[in-house]
Length: 271
Image 1 (cartoon, rainbow, N blue to C red):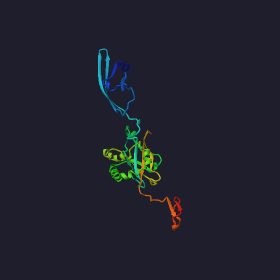
Image 2: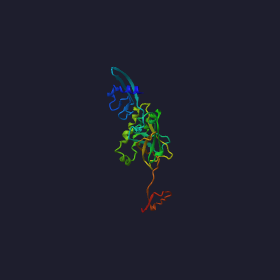
Image 3: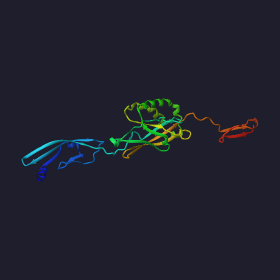
Image 4: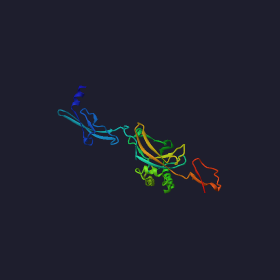
């Protein structure tokens, strides 16, 4: 032991390529590799070092050079990230269960971590969230979105409530961005993206509620979260017959009213 301690006093260690490791890693007098600052795996996941161990004892000198590969392990320090902070969707009232929502942009979520730390789940929050689900898409749905878009002509888009559009006019031009759904062509077939679908159980009725302000939540296994806004517009279909609101009847014409509703206003007037 005394010999080993004496020998260690005559050892010196140097990192040859320390210019590549500035403010990252250094080697102590006893040969221990230590970090100067915390390492970020997402910035660089490995470091290759060249270390010289030099021994001197009087006239006796020797040296050895060693290659060391430092692997940086991952920590769950990154939440899943939406590609965009907000999305806008459009879907028809009275649509069937499983109908996919047309979105102005593809929903893509990425986590900079790896392995288990990169796993996450998506959910929908907000008033009306139970009517919709978000799930991973498949390649066949890309074509389906294009076909669905072709069925939405300009007249259908124009049926949005002016009040709703005015409220969100600062966010996006609805008509313009819905036409930009052709951007799906830029999505590689192997890229993971997500779709929103109508899941019921109640039907969508535009006359009762013409839009939903929702939030998309991404949460990873470590509890880190990220949110994005989703505003869902409900388009109109011709599902309401015209209704008389007011009716005027001349008293002496012999007209008899056989049926009416409580909301109808009826006036009997002189000839």
